[in-house]
Amino acid sequence: MAFEDHRGRRRIVVTGMGVISPVGQTTEDAWRTVLAGESGVGPITLFDASGLDVRIAAEVKGFDPEGRLGRKEARRADRFCQFAIAAALDAVADADLQMDTEDRDRVGVVVGSGIGGIGSLSNAVQTLIERGPNRVSPFLIPMLIIDMSSGLISMRLGATGPNHSVVSACTTGAHAIGEAAEIIRRGDADVMIAGGAEASIVPVGIVGFMNMKALSTRNDEPTKASRPFDADRDGFVSGEGAAILVLESAEHAMSRGAHILAELVGYGSAADAYDMVHPAPEGEGLARAMHLTLKDANLSPADIGYINAHGTSTPLNDAHETMALKHVFGEYVPPVSSTKSMTGHLLGAAGSLEAAFSICALRDNMLPPTINYDTPDPECDLDYVPNTARRVEIAYALSNNSGFGGHNTGLIFGRFAE
Image 1 (tube, rainbow, N blue to C red):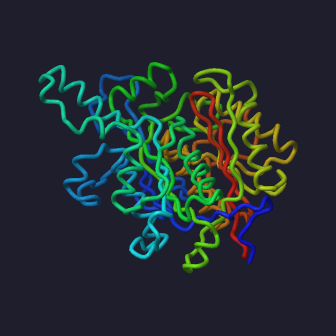
Image 2 (cartoon, rainbow, N blue to C red; image 1 turned 180 degrees about the vertical axis):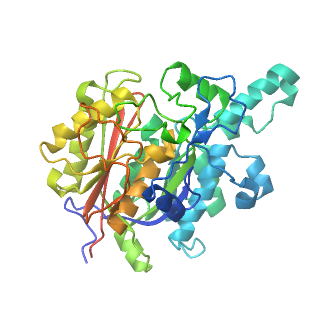
């Protein structure tokens, strides 16, 4: 059994996944929903959006924080942290990771968010204005800071290994997974709990993106609003939730008889160094990230059987991502789909949710569709698995993400072979 990869590093495997999303509050429920091509987008119910130009979002419906975390912990955690903790606990249970028998100094956490506790901050500002400074909660700062997601997970589990957060906008979840893998590879941990969480469907969060003209205004047809690569796309749909993976060294996972879901074989990251919000011309930064990811995995473009695209449903992103894919893969671009067409854009949780879907695609040899792909765009002319899931045998899946600030990441997953 080879426990080292082609570069002599520890091999990294995924042994557990936890998902809280607009399309399901377990990994399997979410996966079934996206394979069925069902949208999680609907009218905003978390606040009164009737006076806004954007009145739709992809909300997590029926989430019970007190039932999942207990009343005391739920009241002291922002919604994004509630999602993160619940997904992490589910991932640890899925991995059958027994913390009472683990060396807890060798178990770490890297969970991030793009925006963090914006809901708690918004409420506190309103309280300050309307009721005065003495009415602002003393828990405000712990509730809004992004690193509290990792901190609270470690406290809940007793994980005393490496612990921090990643913040890189919409690449956060993917960066967290990739950087957690690097911690294991360099020998500082055997197990890492990693991913992203977001809960920014609050008035200021929606209005901020709305005034940038980044969001879809297809209020009368919410389930058709997120339409990546379609000629009639008009912006993304805000989503919320969390997705957490349990990563382990292959040696550690094998030693405890863990069920291995997939191997993380490649991770790459690159910057646009171009613009705060617009992608570099022709997706140059994303193309470099994909090249680095393939190099890290020691794979050629022809080895990739499926790509879970960043695919936001914005005019610029989808066109530039298509150009980047053509640059990297040439004449052969494997099937590409955007599950954001159903989940909306989970911002800091997007990368980890889409990593989970990529692993499910590998496991089941099923490609999730890009729904609402009705009118082809001459600038987006690849195989986007339109509207219906497809059974295809694949060996490796690539998940792409890009974010404001010019961040780009790639993750490649494959089946684990002893």
